Length: 292
Image (tube, rainbow, N blue to C red; front, top):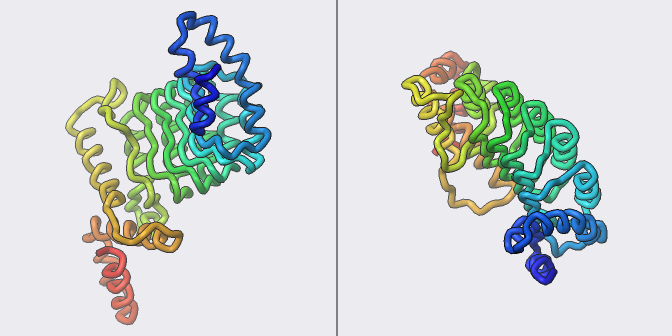
C-alpha cells in the first residue's frame, strides 16, 4: 500500500492508477474498493493536505458517495479537484448526490464525471446545482448519455452561473437544437436585456475532439452554427492585463458583455439611436470603457 500512501503525501488519492500496476487486476480492484471507506476517514478528520481525489475507474456506489459527500459538505476539507470518471454514477442516486455536493461545496474547482450514464435526468439535477455554485471552474460531462433536453436545462441554468469557464459536452446525444441552446446561453440577442443576462464567463463547451456526431452531422448549417458559437466564445477568451480579483472579474464580465453588444452592433445601434439625447453619451461611454 506504499503507493497509495505516497499519493496521499502528494495530496492526491489515485486508486485507479494503483489498480493498473497490479498483476491480479480484478482481485486488487475489489480489494481497493473495500479500502476506499478507510481512506475517506482522513477526509472526515478534516485532512486539509488532500486537494485532489481521483476515483477514476473504481465502482462508486451510493454508500461511498455519501461517505465522500459528508466531509466535503462540512466545509472543513480543501479538496479542489474530484475525478469520478467511468465509476458507474447513474441518473438518480449518484447524480443527485453530486448535484447536492455542487450546490453547497465552496472549494471544488474541477469535477469530471466523464463516461458515466448520468443521462438527461442527472444533467438536469447538476444544472440546477450550478445555479447555486460559486466556485466550480471546470466540469467534464463528456460521454454521459445526455440528450437535448438535458443540454437545454444546462444552458438555461448556466445563465445564472458566473464562475464556470469550461464544460465538456462531447460524446453526448446533442443535435443542432441542443447546440443552438448553448449559443443562446452565451449570446441571446432577442433583446438587450436578454443579452445582458447571457453567460459572459464560459469560454469553452467542448474539448479537443470534433463536436460533430451522428446526432449532429457536419452539414453546412451545422458548420455555420459551430462557427458562430466559436466566435462568441472567443470574445470571452481575450486576455486582459488586469490582475485577477473580484473587482477585475466583474470588470471582465462587463467588458465581455460590451464586446458581444458590439459584435451584434447593427441591431443595437438602432436601439441606441432611439434613446433620449441625454442618455446617448453615457451609453457610448460605457461601450468605450468596457468594449475596448
